[in-house]
Image: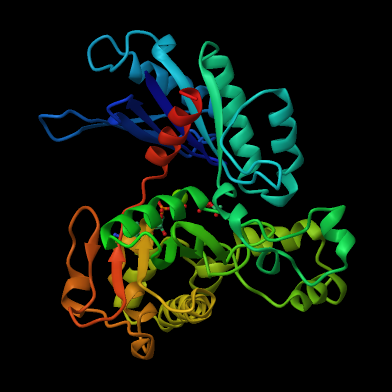
Length: 400
Ligand SMILES: Nc1ncnc2c1ncn2[C@@H]1O[C@H](COP(=O)(O)OP(=O)(O)O)[C@@H](O)[C@H]1O
Ligand SMILES: CC(=O)OP(=O)(O)O
Ligand SMILES: [Mg+2]
């Protein structure tokens, strides 16, 4: 069986093809700047014997359908391709960010499921519209395949009610479903399971820290999510690339009532112009590191603010978990940025967290431990693999 996993963003498509049941990754790639005339496709083919080969294409891609059709050409190329026919793809697994309260598990996609995903657009405006678009394009390109949705929210459906409810009038929950949902669940689940297995402690108390463009943390015990920093939508909690994270709601009221922002302008401000971009002018952590290295004071403040927010949540979640076995850093920033990890672990000795500065600076593939030997709490870097986790969930569903 071939499982093709798609993570469709507003202007990008990440994809990976797996052979099943070996779980062998066959190829992966990234389509960027869809809609612009300088789009790129970076396509990587894996082989058991050799290093992966990478191909880069620069072309104009008017829309997601054009992008995915180019990817299919690469997959089925007579010489460098990995398939003879797109019909060899039997399952397409889609990352869908918001599943609301309806989807607590991986689901076959039908018209009703698509209607629900559309109903949730307003709650995840950066994500769900692109996710649905990816589904509709994939249905046209792979009409014979089973389309499956894996929801970011699903892993957090184990939150206790006192953690997922807001202190608002009850009918806003019972009638409008306003509550904490939580996101990046596929990643939190994957790295928590890796860390729990590594620790050899089935009931391990973990704080998983996913730092990508979007950032979130989860308090996890025995591979169950007990709390998480994102909320109703993927805007709450940590400071992110372009999103503010936690903010007093009275700021929103002030923007609307006193500064006469429209709701759309507030949404744009908090989702696309805030976070690290708002603080420094850059959303990509590598650009902020470069600015920091040139002595930029704004970059220094942004790093301090970003890490301070993480430390506050570590304190909160250690209390939620009544103790702590490991901190788990993951995703683009969490896996690569030693300074973020160092600042995030500062002044946590009272919790038993002792980072090893030298180990923190080293780079190595796979799960690694970066705490001092005497540290009561392990500090782990665990590379996430949302695509593999999605493929595993698709296989489990298809195989019943
Ligand atoms: N070597 C690195 N050092 C610091 N940050 C990095 C490095 N590589 C990637 N990143 C950061 O990771 C972030 C993207 O993470 P990723 O998990 O790919 O996010 P997403 O899946 O949300 O697109 C970017 O802010 C990028 O700067
Ligand atoms: C939910 C979310 O924030 O996802 P991403 O990090 O991919 O933007
Ligand atoms: Mg991501």
